[in-house]
Image 1 (cartoon, rainbow, N blue to C red):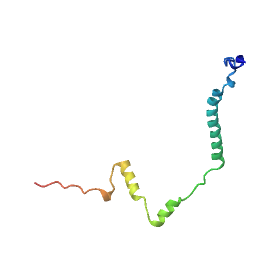
Image 2: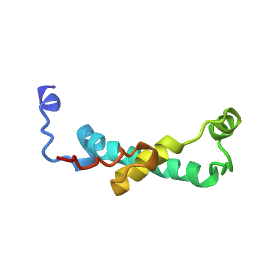
Image 3: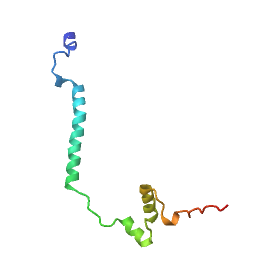
Image 4: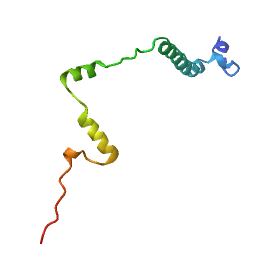
Length: 94
């Protein structure tokens, strides 16, 4: 009876070990989930909206993006808008 319990695992094939299936199974599940996600994304595309609800609401309220555009232009060019530029300093007379 002790001979049955002391059988070594050296002669067994690799698929008989549970750890091997855990190492192979984890990435395999991720690959299958990726294909399923791709299938769902390919068969159910999101609709294209012409006007987002937030933009329409802002247009009704009269909200504009002028300050943001001025800031973006200032960041891109380094120039201040005409309304924000300081008047040129006049040279002092002796």
